[in-house]
Length: 606
Image 1 (tube, rainbow, N blue to C red):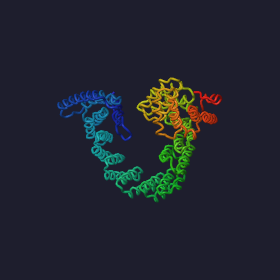
Image 2: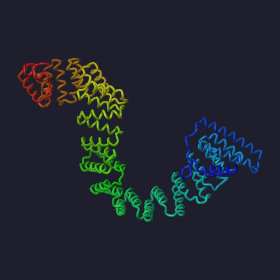
Image 3: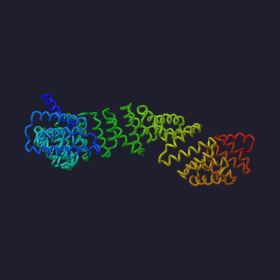
């Protein structure tokens, strides 16, 4: 039994010293206990510690444990470690402290108690027991690492630094922890101490890339560029066939405005790796800074021609172009499109290639191509609402109603809670002469609008039009009134509302006021002038209607406006000219159903 217990002790006590630790030996704590659990745990632990203190007071000199006491201590230790592994810190500490009562000078027991306290969030006791474990065994690296972590978690960086320094001094073959110590110095911005530590590491390990990189960081922070570059030269000499070290040096020259040196070193990298995209991008940026756009573009194209240039790097560059678009220089617009095409060629099945290309095409006014490119992006990833939104907006802008309906239907299957999709779906149904479906979509989408007064007004404006088509005039008027609450100067609503009131011959004074407001803002717009003239016509102010419309009637290409002008002339008694205007309107088209009858019978029908 004793032999088995000792083996288990060795496995759980010594090998388990790395339990819950990262590769550098630091403990990774799980979620902390609740305050209630923490208080209960601390209370129980303090009671046990009190008993331990009382026992030790009765036995001022710790005698050698009997065989039975040793076995009991080992068993309690093993049990405690088991519970700690199971994250039951209450039971774990209970057993560990009972083991401690028997063997208070056992470094491993102190260590595990410290670790359990750290994991349960009791940093004060974790510190005390961790320090005790080091005093009892100053040659165990894990004991120092635990204490350093406890100190760092409390932002006691000076203490953590001293702990690492002691570890390196006291524990044989612990030079690898010089890197941790250097990082701590860097975190505290203690640059000279960090540099000294790295020099010490270099003496022990020789030329190591990590040391040179960290030294470069320090020298750059100290504005000692030449020393940082010297470290870069050391890396290149130590790795003469590695282009990445040459490229790092070139980037350092470029970022510090040593442009000729950056070109020289980047070209050196290309001799090692002729197709290296990073080298071409460095050169492209340097040439751009030197105001050599043609050379810069050429280098960038070579970088994009390389399959080694990853998609994310390409997207970052293209986003930089997007911020410049549309550009007054067509060469910039074309360069952006060319790079986007090259990206699609290299990554033909990546949605990001098509999405960024679509953005560039949109901004350079290639809307149809952009819509098709966005649809390609959705083939490979249909989960991005922003891309669906772009497709729908372009459909609406191009007045492609069938596409708008198809794409909004598809998008709504994926994003049923997006109000804007319901808006455009409703608009598409209205344009397709399906006002009932349009109203259904718009009413549903309107309920989804949150904190967006402008979009709410757009819904109401479209509902006003749709309800008018359904001859539900009370609902139409209510929708228009709601839209004007959102935006009292909405020109579309003011015009449509007043025109529909004139057609019905209702609230003509209100219609006149609204329409007059519009033509003051747009005194040359044929459509708005026609609305105002028609309101006056309905008010039997035929002279005012003629004065309003006669200029527009001579230049407009809208048959319905010319027909209205003919009606006004007829009411003023000029039947010959009225018929001439009706004939002109008939040739243009887009007139009322009554025009044929007017021409046939030479009479006005309304």
